[in-house]
Image (cartoon, rainbow, N blue to C red):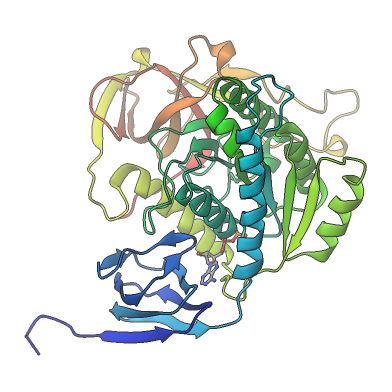
Length: 430
Ligand code: ADP
Protein backbone atom coordinates (compact mmCIF):
# COMPACT_ATOMS: atom_id res chain seq x y z
CA UNK A 1 0.00 0.00 0.00
CA UNK A 2 1.01 3.59 -0.65
CA UNK A 3 1.64 5.47 2.61
CA UNK A 4 -1.05 8.00 3.37
CA UNK A 5 -3.56 6.38 1.04
CA UNK A 6 -6.05 4.36 2.99
CA UNK A 7 -7.38 1.33 1.27
CA UNK A 8 -10.80 0.28 2.42
CA UNK A 9 -12.05 -0.79 -0.95
CA UNK A 10 -14.95 -3.16 -0.91
CA UNK A 11 -17.01 -4.54 -3.76
CA UNK A 12 -20.63 -5.62 -3.37
CA UNK A 13 -22.52 -7.56 -5.98
CA UNK A 14 -26.24 -6.81 -6.03
CA UNK A 15 -28.83 -9.11 -7.57
CA UNK A 16 -31.74 -7.69 -9.52
CA UNK A 17 -34.29 -5.76 -7.44
CA UNK A 18 -32.11 -5.60 -4.39
CA UNK A 19 -30.39 -2.76 -2.58
CA UNK A 20 -27.29 -1.93 -0.59
CA UNK A 21 -28.28 0.01 2.53
CA UNK A 22 -25.62 2.28 3.92
CA UNK A 23 -25.18 4.45 6.96
CA UNK A 24 -22.13 6.62 6.43
CA UNK A 25 -19.84 6.92 9.46
CA UNK A 26 -18.33 10.18 10.72
CA UNK A 27 -16.04 10.14 7.70
CA UNK A 28 -17.23 10.70 4.12
CA UNK A 29 -17.67 7.62 1.95
CA UNK A 30 -16.76 7.23 -1.71
CA UNK A 31 -18.82 4.94 -3.88
CA UNK A 32 -19.23 4.03 -7.54
CA UNK A 33 -20.96 1.59 -9.85
CA UNK A 34 -18.47 -0.67 -11.59
CA UNK A 35 -20.93 -2.88 -13.39
CA UNK A 36 -24.61 -2.76 -14.31
CA UNK A 37 -26.93 0.10 -13.39
CA UNK A 38 -28.05 1.36 -10.01
CA UNK A 39 -29.93 4.30 -8.56
CA UNK A 40 -30.14 6.16 -5.28
CA UNK A 41 -33.74 7.05 -4.39
CA UNK A 42 -34.77 7.16 -8.04
CA UNK A 43 -31.72 8.94 -9.37
CA UNK A 44 -29.36 6.90 -11.51
CA UNK A 45 -25.67 6.73 -10.64
CA UNK A 46 -23.39 7.37 -13.60
CA UNK A 47 -21.18 4.35 -14.40
CA UNK A 48 -17.63 4.26 -13.03
CA UNK A 49 -17.63 7.74 -11.54
CA UNK A 50 -16.79 8.05 -7.84
CA UNK A 51 -19.20 10.09 -5.72
CA UNK A 52 -18.50 11.23 -2.20
CA UNK A 53 -21.26 10.96 0.40
CA UNK A 54 -21.16 13.17 3.48
CA UNK A 55 -20.87 11.81 7.05
CA UNK A 56 -23.95 10.25 8.66
CA UNK A 57 -25.98 10.13 5.46
CA UNK A 58 -28.31 7.13 5.28
CA UNK A 59 -29.24 5.86 1.87
CA UNK A 60 -29.67 2.83 -0.37
CA UNK A 61 -28.22 1.94 -3.76
CA UNK A 62 -30.93 0.01 -5.58
CA UNK A 63 -30.64 -1.96 -8.80
CA UNK A 64 -33.44 -3.15 -11.09
CA UNK A 65 -31.28 -5.52 -13.15
CA UNK A 66 -28.17 -6.21 -11.06
CA UNK A 67 -25.01 -4.21 -10.40
CA UNK A 68 -21.62 -4.27 -8.76
CA UNK A 69 -20.90 -1.43 -6.37
CA UNK A 70 -17.53 -0.37 -5.05
CA UNK A 71 -17.12 1.49 -1.77
CA UNK A 72 -14.06 3.24 -0.44
CA UNK A 73 -14.20 4.07 3.25
CA UNK A 74 -15.52 2.75 6.52
CA UNK A 75 -19.29 2.76 6.99
CA UNK A 76 -21.34 2.75 10.16
CA UNK A 77 -23.31 -0.12 8.65
CA UNK A 78 -23.85 -1.56 5.21
CA UNK A 79 -25.88 -4.56 4.20
CA UNK A 80 -27.81 -5.81 1.23
CA UNK A 81 -31.55 -6.41 1.22
CA UNK A 82 -33.63 -8.14 -1.40
CA UNK A 83 -36.99 -7.38 0.16
CA UNK A 84 -37.98 -3.85 -0.78
CA UNK A 85 -41.25 -2.11 -1.66
CA UNK A 86 -39.66 -0.66 -4.81
CA UNK A 87 -41.88 -2.53 -7.27
CA UNK A 88 -45.00 -1.12 -5.63
CA UNK A 89 -43.46 2.36 -5.66
CA UNK A 90 -42.59 2.19 -9.34
CA UNK A 91 -46.11 0.94 -10.08
CA UNK A 92 -47.43 4.12 -8.48
CA UNK A 93 -45.06 6.05 -10.70
CA UNK A 94 -46.43 4.27 -13.79
CA UNK A 95 -49.99 5.28 -12.89
CA UNK A 96 -48.93 8.89 -12.31
CA UNK A 97 -47.09 8.84 -15.61
CA UNK A 98 -50.23 7.74 -17.44
CA UNK A 99 -52.19 10.57 -15.83
CA UNK A 100 -49.55 13.08 -16.87
CA UNK A 101 -49.74 11.86 -20.45
CA UNK A 102 -53.51 12.10 -20.38
CA UNK A 103 -53.33 15.66 -19.06
CA UNK A 104 -50.76 16.64 -21.67
CA UNK A 105 -52.82 15.18 -24.49
CA UNK A 106 -55.82 17.32 -23.65
CA UNK A 107 -54.99 20.50 -25.51
CA UNK A 108 -57.68 22.63 -23.93
CA UNK A 109 -56.31 25.35 -21.69
CA UNK A 110 -59.39 26.04 -19.61
CA UNK A 111 -58.99 25.43 -15.91
CA UNK A 112 -61.44 22.54 -15.91
CA UNK A 113 -59.46 20.41 -18.35
CA UNK A 114 -57.67 17.36 -16.98
CA UNK A 115 -54.48 18.13 -15.16
CA UNK A 116 -51.54 16.17 -13.91
CA UNK A 117 -51.62 14.27 -10.61
CA UNK A 118 -51.27 16.12 -7.36
CA UNK A 119 -49.71 13.57 -5.10
CA UNK A 120 -49.39 14.04 -1.36
CA UNK A 121 -47.27 11.65 0.70
CA UNK A 122 -48.33 11.18 4.32
CA UNK A 123 -47.30 8.96 7.20
CA UNK A 124 -45.67 8.99 10.63
CA UNK A 125 -42.11 10.22 11.11
CA UNK A 126 -39.52 7.87 9.71
CA UNK A 127 -41.85 6.08 7.36
CA UNK A 128 -39.85 7.03 4.30
CA UNK A 129 -41.98 9.97 3.07
CA UNK A 130 -39.13 12.18 1.93
CA UNK A 131 -37.47 9.21 0.29
CA UNK A 132 -40.61 8.25 -1.65
CA UNK A 133 -41.15 11.85 -2.80
CA UNK A 134 -37.57 11.92 -4.08
CA UNK A 135 -38.11 8.73 -6.07
CA UNK A 136 -41.39 9.89 -7.60
CA UNK A 137 -39.83 13.22 -8.55
CA UNK A 138 -36.67 11.73 -10.03
CA UNK A 139 -38.47 9.04 -12.00
CA UNK A 140 -40.84 11.66 -13.43
CA UNK A 141 -37.96 14.00 -14.32
CA UNK A 142 -36.08 11.16 -15.97
CA UNK A 143 -39.00 10.82 -18.36
CA UNK A 144 -38.88 14.48 -19.20
CA UNK A 145 -41.65 15.80 -16.92
CA UNK A 146 -41.14 18.93 -14.87
CA UNK A 147 -43.07 18.18 -11.70
CA UNK A 148 -43.32 20.64 -8.85
CA UNK A 149 -42.01 19.47 -5.49
CA UNK A 150 -43.75 20.94 -2.46
CA UNK A 151 -42.33 20.56 1.03
CA UNK A 152 -44.62 21.27 3.96
CA UNK A 153 -42.34 19.75 6.59
CA UNK A 154 -41.10 22.63 8.73
CA UNK A 155 -39.13 20.23 10.95
CA UNK A 156 -37.01 18.40 8.39
CA UNK A 157 -37.48 20.19 5.10
CA UNK A 158 -35.56 19.14 2.02
CA UNK A 159 -35.38 22.41 0.08
CA UNK A 160 -34.02 25.03 2.44
CA UNK A 161 -33.64 26.07 6.06
CA UNK A 162 -35.96 24.43 8.65
CA UNK A 163 -39.01 26.45 9.61
CA UNK A 164 -39.84 27.04 5.94
CA UNK A 165 -42.42 25.69 3.58
CA UNK A 166 -41.34 25.73 0.00
CA UNK A 167 -41.90 24.55 -3.54
CA UNK A 168 -39.65 24.16 -6.54
CA UNK A 169 -39.99 22.99 -10.12
CA UNK A 170 -37.79 19.99 -10.86
CA UNK A 171 -36.32 19.66 -14.31
CA UNK A 172 -33.97 16.74 -13.95
CA UNK A 173 -33.47 13.78 -11.64
CA UNK A 174 -32.17 14.92 -8.25
CA UNK A 175 -28.48 14.93 -7.58
CA UNK A 176 -27.73 11.82 -5.53
CA UNK A 177 -25.78 13.84 -2.98
CA UNK A 178 -27.13 17.39 -3.15
CA UNK A 179 -30.85 16.54 -3.27
CA UNK A 180 -33.29 19.30 -4.14
CA UNK A 181 -32.11 22.47 -5.89
CA UNK A 182 -32.74 25.81 -4.19
CA UNK A 183 -32.19 28.32 -6.97
CA UNK A 184 -35.76 28.40 -8.28
CA UNK A 185 -37.57 27.70 -5.02
CA UNK A 186 -40.56 29.64 -3.76
CA UNK A 187 -40.02 29.87 -0.01
CA UNK A 188 -42.24 31.03 2.86
CA UNK A 189 -40.71 31.47 6.28
CA UNK A 190 -42.95 30.21 9.05
CA UNK A 191 -40.13 30.50 11.56
CA UNK A 192 -40.67 27.51 13.87
CA UNK A 193 -39.85 23.83 13.58
CA UNK A 194 -43.33 22.61 14.47
CA UNK A 195 -46.71 23.90 13.27
CA UNK A 196 -47.87 23.75 16.90
CA UNK A 197 -46.21 27.11 17.62
CA UNK A 198 -48.71 28.94 15.44
CA UNK A 199 -51.19 26.70 13.68
CA UNK A 200 -53.06 29.57 12.03
CA UNK A 201 -49.91 31.02 10.56
CA UNK A 202 -48.84 27.62 9.25
CA UNK A 203 -52.19 27.14 7.54
CA UNK A 204 -52.13 30.63 6.11
CA UNK A 205 -48.71 30.09 4.59
CA UNK A 206 -49.71 26.71 3.15
CA UNK A 207 -52.65 28.48 1.53
CA UNK A 208 -50.47 31.26 0.15
CA UNK A 209 -48.05 28.79 -1.35
CA UNK A 210 -50.88 26.78 -2.90
CA UNK A 211 -52.44 29.88 -4.44
CA UNK A 212 -49.20 30.97 -6.04
CA UNK A 213 -48.65 27.51 -7.52
CA UNK A 214 -52.23 27.44 -8.76
CA UNK A 215 -51.63 30.70 -10.62
CA UNK A 216 -48.35 29.44 -12.06
CA UNK A 217 -50.04 26.28 -13.29
CA UNK A 218 -52.65 28.31 -15.15
CA UNK A 219 -49.96 29.96 -17.22
CA UNK A 220 -47.80 26.88 -17.62
CA UNK A 221 -49.40 23.80 -19.21
CA UNK A 222 -46.15 21.86 -18.92
CA UNK A 223 -46.02 22.18 -15.11
CA UNK A 224 -49.73 21.66 -14.90
CA UNK A 225 -49.54 18.34 -16.73
CA UNK A 226 -46.57 17.18 -14.67
CA UNK A 227 -48.41 17.98 -11.43
CA UNK A 228 -47.03 18.09 -7.92
CA UNK A 229 -45.50 15.79 -5.37
CA UNK A 230 -46.08 17.08 -1.85
CA UNK A 231 -44.11 15.96 1.19
CA UNK A 232 -45.67 16.41 4.63
CA UNK A 233 -44.54 16.23 8.22
CA UNK A 234 -44.76 13.18 10.44
CA UNK A 235 -47.25 14.71 12.87
CA UNK A 236 -50.40 12.71 12.14
CA UNK A 237 -52.48 12.88 15.33
CA UNK A 238 -54.85 15.56 16.58
CA UNK A 239 -53.98 18.92 15.07
CA UNK A 240 -51.35 17.23 12.92
CA UNK A 241 -54.09 15.14 11.33
CA UNK A 242 -56.23 18.22 10.76
CA UNK A 243 -53.30 19.92 9.10
CA UNK A 244 -52.92 16.95 6.75
CA UNK A 245 -56.58 17.26 5.77
CA UNK A 246 -56.06 20.99 5.34
CA UNK A 247 -53.12 20.37 3.00
CA UNK A 248 -55.00 17.73 0.99
CA UNK A 249 -57.84 20.17 0.49
CA UNK A 250 -55.77 23.30 -0.08
CA UNK A 251 -53.64 21.73 -2.80
CA UNK A 252 -56.57 19.79 -4.27
CA UNK A 253 -54.59 16.60 -3.95
CA UNK A 254 -55.78 13.84 -6.28
CA UNK A 255 -53.60 11.02 -4.93
CA UNK A 256 -52.89 10.48 -1.23
CA UNK A 257 -50.10 7.99 -0.60
CA UNK A 258 -50.15 6.68 2.96
CA UNK A 259 -46.92 5.12 4.16
CA UNK A 260 -46.66 2.60 6.92
CA UNK A 261 -49.78 3.24 8.96
CA UNK A 262 -52.99 1.30 8.69
CA UNK A 263 -54.94 3.58 11.03
CA UNK A 264 -54.08 6.76 9.15
CA UNK A 265 -54.93 5.04 5.88
CA UNK A 266 -58.36 3.97 7.03
CA UNK A 267 -59.12 7.36 8.58
CA UNK A 268 -58.20 9.19 5.39
CA UNK A 269 -59.95 6.67 3.20
CA UNK A 270 -63.06 7.20 5.25
CA UNK A 271 -63.13 11.00 5.28
CA UNK A 272 -62.21 11.22 1.60
CA UNK A 273 -64.60 8.56 0.35
CA UNK A 274 -67.14 11.14 -0.80
CA UNK A 275 -64.57 12.65 -3.12
CA UNK A 276 -64.50 10.55 -6.25
CA UNK A 277 -61.51 12.41 -7.64
CA UNK A 278 -59.19 11.55 -4.75
CA UNK A 279 -57.43 8.19 -4.56
CA UNK A 280 -56.11 7.06 -1.21
CA UNK A 281 -53.39 4.44 -1.60
CA UNK A 282 -51.65 2.43 1.09
CA UNK A 283 -47.97 1.64 0.62
CA UNK A 284 -45.51 -0.40 2.63
CA UNK A 285 -42.74 1.28 4.49
CA UNK A 286 -39.30 0.13 3.40
CA UNK A 287 -37.37 -1.96 5.92
CA UNK A 288 -34.41 0.26 5.12
CA UNK A 289 -35.87 3.44 6.60
CA UNK A 290 -33.74 4.43 9.53
CA UNK A 291 -35.47 5.73 12.65
CA UNK A 292 -33.95 8.98 13.79
CA UNK A 293 -34.19 10.14 17.36
CA UNK A 294 -34.71 13.65 18.68
CA UNK A 295 -31.01 14.40 18.86
CA UNK A 296 -30.43 13.19 15.34
CA UNK A 297 -33.25 15.40 14.09
CA UNK A 298 -31.84 18.38 15.91
CA UNK A 299 -28.40 17.70 14.45
CA UNK A 300 -29.96 17.27 11.02
CA UNK A 301 -31.68 20.65 11.34
CA UNK A 302 -28.43 22.30 12.31
CA UNK A 303 -26.66 20.72 9.36
CA UNK A 304 -29.34 22.06 7.03
CA UNK A 305 -28.65 25.56 8.33
CA UNK A 306 -24.92 25.05 8.06
CA UNK A 307 -25.38 23.73 4.53
CA UNK A 308 -27.36 26.83 3.57
CA UNK A 309 -24.50 29.13 4.52
CA UNK A 310 -21.43 26.95 3.96
CA UNK A 311 -22.49 24.38 1.36
CA UNK A 312 -22.74 20.64 1.75
CA UNK A 313 -19.02 20.09 2.17
CA UNK A 314 -18.14 23.56 3.42
CA UNK A 315 -17.17 24.66 -0.07
CA UNK A 316 -18.89 28.05 0.27
CA UNK A 317 -17.98 30.96 2.46
CA UNK A 318 -20.77 33.23 3.59
CA UNK A 319 -20.31 36.97 3.77
CA UNK A 320 -20.29 38.87 7.04
CA UNK A 321 -22.12 42.20 6.84
CA UNK A 322 -22.82 44.89 9.38
CA UNK A 323 -25.85 47.18 9.29
CA UNK A 324 -27.05 49.96 11.53
CA UNK A 325 -30.19 49.19 13.47
CA UNK A 326 -31.87 51.92 11.47
CA UNK A 327 -31.12 50.20 8.15
CA UNK A 328 -33.09 47.07 8.88
CA UNK A 329 -36.56 46.40 10.22
CA UNK A 330 -37.13 43.15 12.03
CA UNK A 331 -40.65 41.78 12.51
CA UNK A 332 -42.20 38.76 14.06
CA UNK A 333 -45.57 37.21 13.41
CA UNK A 334 -48.08 36.26 16.10
CA UNK A 335 -47.45 35.82 19.77
CA UNK A 336 -45.43 33.08 21.39
CA UNK A 337 -47.04 29.70 21.91
CA UNK A 338 -50.72 30.28 22.55
CA UNK A 339 -51.68 29.87 26.18
CA UNK A 340 -54.50 27.44 26.95
CA UNK A 341 -57.72 29.18 27.94
CA UNK A 342 -57.55 27.68 31.42
CA UNK A 343 -54.24 29.41 32.09
CA UNK A 344 -55.65 32.88 31.49
CA UNK A 345 -57.63 35.16 33.77
CA UNK A 346 -61.36 34.95 33.20
CA UNK A 347 -62.54 37.36 30.53
CA UNK A 348 -59.22 37.84 28.85
CA UNK A 349 -58.70 37.24 25.16
CA UNK A 350 -57.41 33.66 24.93
CA UNK A 351 -55.62 33.98 21.63
CA UNK A 352 -53.51 36.89 20.59
CA UNK A 353 -53.93 37.45 16.87
CA UNK A 354 -51.76 34.69 15.38
CA UNK A 355 -51.20 36.63 12.16
CA UNK A 356 -50.38 39.98 13.71
CA UNK A 357 -47.07 41.40 12.56
CA UNK A 358 -45.16 43.29 15.22
CA UNK A 359 -41.86 45.15 14.96
CA UNK A 360 -39.03 43.75 17.03
CA UNK A 361 -36.97 46.17 19.04
CA UNK A 362 -33.45 45.03 18.25
CA UNK A 363 -32.11 46.65 21.40
CA UNK A 364 -34.49 44.83 23.69
CA UNK A 365 -34.95 41.48 22.11
CA UNK A 366 -32.08 39.11 21.96
CA UNK A 367 -31.57 38.34 18.30
CA UNK A 368 -28.09 36.94 18.69
CA UNK A 369 -27.81 33.58 16.84
CA UNK A 370 -31.25 33.99 15.27
CA UNK A 371 -32.02 33.03 11.71
CA UNK A 372 -33.87 35.88 10.00
CA UNK A 373 -35.63 35.66 6.66
CA UNK A 374 -35.29 38.44 4.11
CA UNK A 375 -38.84 39.15 3.00
CA UNK A 376 -40.07 40.24 -0.41
CA UNK A 377 -42.75 42.28 1.38
CA UNK A 378 -42.66 45.99 0.66
CA UNK A 379 -44.78 46.88 3.66
CA UNK A 380 -45.02 45.11 7.01
CA UNK A 381 -48.66 44.20 6.41
CA UNK A 382 -47.59 42.10 3.40
CA UNK A 383 -45.18 39.95 5.40
CA UNK A 384 -47.52 37.04 6.07
CA UNK A 385 -48.42 36.71 2.40
CA UNK A 386 -44.93 37.29 1.00
CA UNK A 387 -42.27 34.77 0.17
CA UNK A 388 -38.66 35.31 1.14
CA UNK A 389 -35.50 35.70 -0.89
CA UNK A 390 -33.21 34.02 1.61
CA UNK A 391 -31.86 34.01 5.15
CA UNK A 392 -29.27 35.69 7.31
CA UNK A 393 -27.72 34.52 10.56
CA UNK A 394 -27.17 37.10 13.31
CA UNK A 395 -23.63 36.81 14.69
CA UNK A 396 -23.39 40.00 16.72
CA UNK A 397 -25.65 42.67 18.16
CA UNK A 398 -23.82 45.77 19.35
CA UNK A 399 -26.31 47.80 21.34
CA UNK A 400 -23.85 50.62 22.07
CA UNK A 401 -22.95 51.27 18.46
CA UNK A 402 -26.42 50.23 17.28
CA UNK A 403 -25.03 47.76 14.78
CA UNK A 404 -26.10 44.29 13.84
CA UNK A 405 -23.71 41.83 12.15
CA UNK A 406 -24.92 38.84 10.19
CA UNK A 407 -23.82 36.16 7.77
CA UNK A 408 -25.45 36.10 4.37
CA UNK A 409 -24.94 33.64 1.51
CA UNK A 410 -24.16 36.45 -0.93
CA UNK A 411 -22.24 39.74 -0.64
CA UNK A 412 -23.56 43.27 -0.70
CA UNK A 413 -26.70 44.93 0.55
CA UNK A 414 -29.72 42.82 1.42
CA UNK A 415 -32.42 42.79 -1.26
CA UNK A 416 -34.86 44.13 1.30
CA UNK A 417 -34.68 45.73 4.72
CA UNK A 418 -37.69 43.83 6.00
CA UNK A 419 -36.49 40.85 8.02
CA UNK A 420 -38.63 38.21 9.73
CA UNK A 421 -37.72 36.52 12.99
CA UNK A 422 -39.19 33.27 14.27
CA UNK A 423 -37.99 31.00 17.03
CA UNK A 424 -35.25 29.41 14.96
CA UNK A 425 -31.72 29.85 16.26
CA UNK A 426 -28.45 28.20 15.46
CA UNK A 427 -25.16 27.84 17.30
CA UNK A 428 -22.48 27.71 14.72
CA UNK A 429 -19.89 25.10 15.59
CA UNK A 430 -16.53 24.96 13.92
P1 ADP B 1 -39.64 10.49 6.72
O1 ADP B 1 -39.64 11.54 5.64
O2 ADP B 1 -40.90 9.67 6.70
O3 ADP B 1 -39.36 11.03 8.09
P2 ADP B 1 -37.25 9.60 5.39
O4 ADP B 1 -37.68 9.33 3.99
O5 ADP B 1 -36.55 10.89 5.63
O6 ADP B 1 -38.48 9.45 6.39
O7 ADP B 1 -36.36 8.36 5.85
C1 ADP B 1 -35.68 8.34 7.10
C2 ADP B 1 -34.22 8.03 6.89
O8 ADP B 1 -34.06 6.71 6.36
C3 ADP B 1 -33.51 8.95 5.91
O9 ADP B 1 -32.23 9.26 6.42
C4 ADP B 1 -33.43 8.14 4.63
O10 ADP B 1 -32.35 8.54 3.82
C5 ADP B 1 -33.26 6.75 5.19
N1 ADP B 1 -33.75 5.70 4.27
C6 ADP B 1 -34.95 5.65 3.68
N2 ADP B 1 -35.08 4.53 2.94
C7 ADP B 1 -33.91 3.85 3.07
C8 ADP B 1 -33.40 2.61 2.56
N3 ADP B 1 -34.14 1.84 1.75
N4 ADP B 1 -32.15 2.25 2.92
C9 ADP B 1 -31.41 3.01 3.74
N5 ADP B 1 -31.81 4.18 4.26
C10 ADP B 1 -33.05 4.60 3.93
